[in-house]
Length: 318
Ligand SMILES: *[C@@H]1O[C@H](CO)[C@@H](O)[C@H](O)[C@H]1NC(C)=O
Image (cartoon, rainbow, N blue to C red):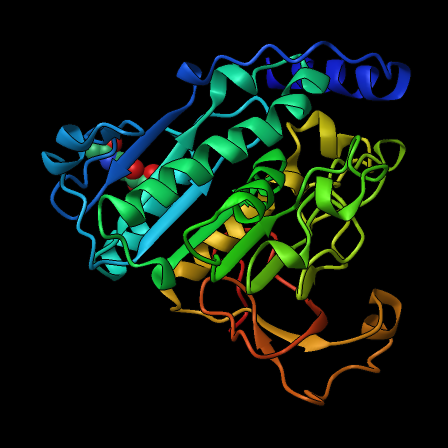
């Protein structure tokens, strides 16, 4: 099924520039909340914008950091990596974990429609976060967002549209490439969307290269594990198998990020101009500083960073 979906996406992106008129029903956007009081995979509590009674009855704790996750195209907010990350985060500390479930507006195979929905979902999520700050007393200095694929661009739209506070951090996991190479910075994730924007590129390139992520650096720091184009274990039978294997390299970005949460093994990354120099061994010193990619990233450094990983979990090489 996923393979078929990806094929259809490829065909759409290559052949069609036709845009469907945006038809957005924001009731199709759901805000799912997990905390240490309701940690079970399916025991999320749904928050509703402007429903204070519901918020007061919820396990939301305004003094805890709030962690927001946004899934991508043909994905869901109540399963897969957001649930994996929820489990890891709650093992680490007491958080409000919010997953933006916009699956019905991001459903396959209508990629151009999903792209059109990105700004509205971002604005709506920004309204929820502003409201959580004003009405719920949420600490805006302890909010961060992680988005995968199209969800990374939604995260950018959230940061851009917040009025109650400036977003401290966005992590963009292989931000979607198709249709976004042509967009301006304000129409995609960019460094102005948060105080600190970290990008993990795992499938950056063009569709014809079997890539669906942006390869350009679009954050304050951009990590390129294994060169950022194809990941080990995803292209054993040639580049095309990457997309046919369900977007293997594209999905690797969230696997790496989820693994980074526990911090048990570090993704040490080296400042470098490009992958060729890194492979040639020209970047094996830390220069201004090495960086740990992922959840525990240092916010003070800037630039592009390279690293290698294993082809299977655990991916980090310590
Ligand atoms: C909950 O999700 C985690 C991570 O995705 C998984 O390892 C675990 O088995 C799930 N638990 C249950 C009870 O399904």
